Image (cartoon, rainbow, N blue to C red; front, side, top):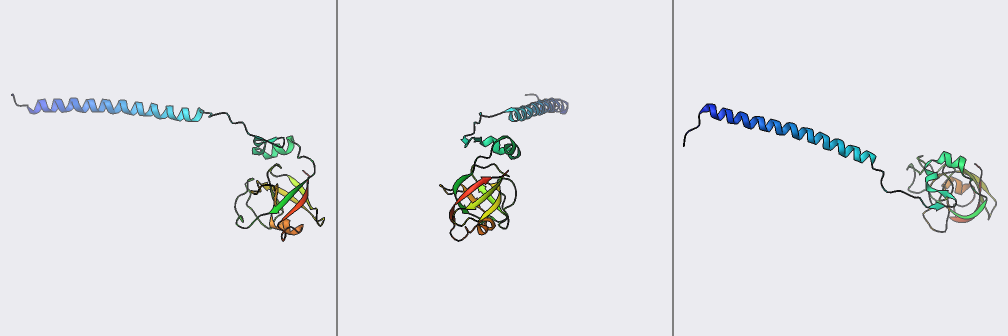
Length: 172
């Protein structure tokens, strides 16, 4: 076997270095193309079609744009519902409308009324009335359709009993 000369070793090392450089260049090109394809596919994928359920003539999609839901859809007629109040543990947390919950303001949570609507709530037991802004979704308990803030509940005498039948009249 013939020993390698220094010149031959350098030439082979140069060939290997050239090949590695060529592969690195190809790898860079392929990785850039792969990243671009993943980005484009991720940005264009629409996903499965989503059809929201209907609630009292208003679609869930209408609540996503609450100001338009305000204008396009009727708020409905006066209705009598069971109401309760909520607040402990929610102070300064975000509501569904994005505002922070403040127990001192006249606000309400409703499952059916559009966010940012104003309603008049009248306690049927004592006739006391309060105007509230719907800024959250709820109540969590079944058989109730309105949750009042502590200030609104206090105003109509709902704080002590906790639950009462009320008349809800949409204003705007």
